[in-house]
Length: 489
Length: 151
Image (cartoon, rainbow over all chains, first blue to last red; front, side, top):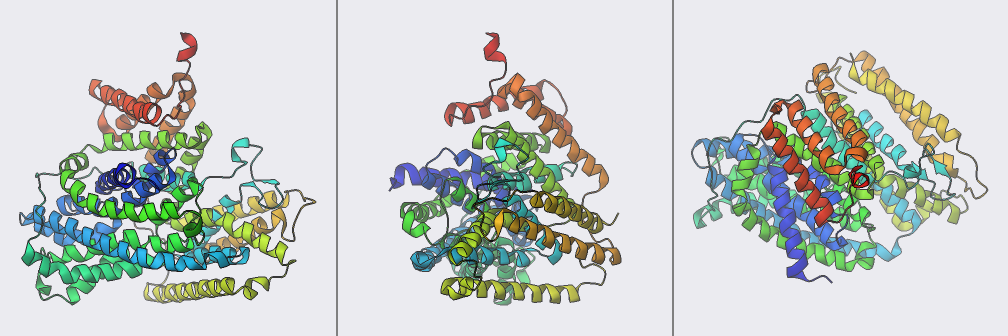
């Protein structure tokens, strides 16, 4: 077990600082912030690397509220719900108070989510020893079933992105026969395409290409300092924080949930239960507390399906999954048996990260405001430099950088064609697991497909996958009926 | 241009090409019931069917991508990509620091930041910063270029 104060705490602090900086940059989502850091963690101890990435997630969820409050531009999708009341408070000269409420609510939500994570994730992992190849296959299918709910407006295009991801996962050496597939005689492709390359390309490089030609970001006009809420304000925002934390817990656990959905749900419910409904939209502290508590709860609760079942429920969780895989760790039931030190370290790191978020969030406000105000050309140039340097670091190969650029083009094209990115990431991440365990199961069962129903865990997981898929399809059907005709695809 | 139609057609072509490549994977004596071709062929068929569904639906539907990129921004994005490709081409010769400084300067210029002594200084300082971070601190060897062979 790594020493807490000399390794876990510094990693948590570094991750939180990086996350706040990344989250505060408009256009850089928590998943992109994590993807940018991912290559840098390659040479670190696995526990330190995972703590740093998870802490980045925590920091980025808070960081997104800074430009939301200061320049009416949400740094992250999840911070979009904070814009209305945060910016209204800023216009009233209460920017410091708004930033303080955001930070304090994020801290409360983060600790709530961590408590739920510690209580639930390990219990789910007791299934670990009963997992067979059939169950692992079913788990992969359960993960893929999320694609339908991640497809947003277009189910067909989401499914297509998922299948394209599965196709990418087949590049390399066949898991059973050892034959090479789709490698074009390139030795660099023999071991397949690393999910991290796909993620950095789709999210970071794709975003850089998409931001090109967009107008510059609005400059910050005033210097703001955080002012933490007093006892009276604590009491007032306690209820919206609880609402946000509970919603964030459920949304984080649910495949396809995530910070943005939970933030808007929390904002809506906080308004429904508020005694000061009329203040919402005009600078209500509750309108900041609820969404900020919700999205920081998600930063922890999203790790429940990831750690216990190996299923990423959001873009950021998918990048964290990439971090686990990069260090040879397989999230899922066996993680709690084979890598207890990593899990314990992660819990400790998340606790440290939430404490660090308050301290660093206070200290880092000045540099954040300075960075957000940097001219866009410099900001994009340094992000580009960081990406190409980081990707090269993965296997010290220029081929990998070229591959990441190619996935950047793919990411840009997917944005152009309005195709969701996450289904493809899921396909890439889960494709090998699904194929290898499917074929191993059939070898063990002499080709009998009933083996997937006869294995009890496999049957339950496949049943859940069917429920998820049917639910998503029904929801898509209802949404499509509500939309005007001629807009479905 | 109906973008869904274009995307569907591109994916249909990808599915066809991928299927042909999957069919060309040789059989192995160690092969299981499914084989190395099994799932890739299935994926190709599923993608092909979904592509056809998208093509049929989009043929009858109106264009509905309010936030999609316009052609000029597509060309500008292409310029950013060229900067990355040029970086990849020159880094084995010029080495990491100079190439990265060039990438930073070119990106800054391309994004409207101008090209002057200040930009050059920022680019060089940034490249040195990344060299310190990756090579000196993390110990990851980046390409030194032709310089070591000249001295």
